[in-house]
Amino acid sequence: MKRLHLALASIFGIFFILLGITGSTLVYRDSFTQISAPKLDINYLDYEVHDIDRLITELESHYTELKVRSIKLPAHPRDHYLFSIRYLNDQQAQSTQIYINPVSMAISPAIEHRNPIEAFFYEFHSSYFMEENGTALVGITGAGISVLVLIGFYIWMPSSGRFKQSLRAPEKSTGAVLLSWLHRTTGACFTPLLLIISLTGLMLVFRPAMILPFSSNPVTSQVDDKTITFTCLSSPGIDDYLYSAEQLFPQADATHIKLPKRDSRPVEITLRHDDEVNSALGLTKVYLDTNCAAPVKYRDGRALTLSEALTETIVSLHNGSFFGVTGQLIYSLTGILPLFFGLSGGILWLSRRRLRRAR
Image (cartoon, rainbow, N blue to C red; front, side, top):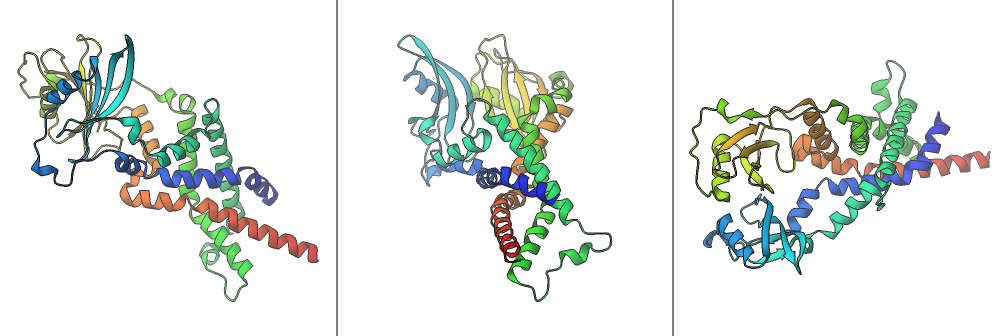
């Protein structure tokens, strides 16, 4: 068993270290994105903030035949609005994302604000920089790491009644013995967390086979079930859509607006409740009539289908957000452990090899 453990460590060890370090950084991916995004001046409260409809009017003066596809609302009062738009350039339709300052209405391409560190680490962590088959290779690596961790735990696992004793540091021991104890005990203590990270990553890579079999249509409810009366508005604007959605869920914060390609389709407003599964934008949806901003149906993010709950829980377990700020800190530290395992395991292997040669 020890030889198998050594073989797996030789094959997957370097990938274990690299995925751990990059994953440790990506725990704070949202923070990297937030740092790179443009900000208002520190005294932003002294200025007048334009509403979204006024910002769209400004964009129409810069882009030919502008079509706004979606809008990401500011997560912080100092943030800019992020627009996904489609427009004509030399008679060719093009799509892009832009930030717009809600005070000065200055426009800047979103690509200019992408954090290079986050982009580099994400591309490696998710696909080893390979456009094809890279994600599958990451998944295979995750499977190998899971087996490596399980075998390491099996080798360490003490006999009945000796569990507490095995956790105690050896007394009056040499450096090699102490390092061996640290290697084994640290690995054993973090086995559950390492398995959660590797197995959830494996499930995300092979999502079609592991999660989609549980898929079902999202549960939506008609607004008739709500005891709120909505007035149909003529020629509604973006702010009217937001107001209607927030009337339906007054305790939630609107985060994203998706506009339909055809007026026959509803406007989709995404909101986030504090007590729903942690997600990038939120899981609550309100669908509004395009022509009068009256809600027609909704989906409460606190009552998900099995596949939705499974997917969101797996994502939040993999990136640490499931456990809040404390979980993210623990995850970032856990990502550094593979480097410790690699160094300590290499030192122990070399020391044992020297002893064998000396004998």
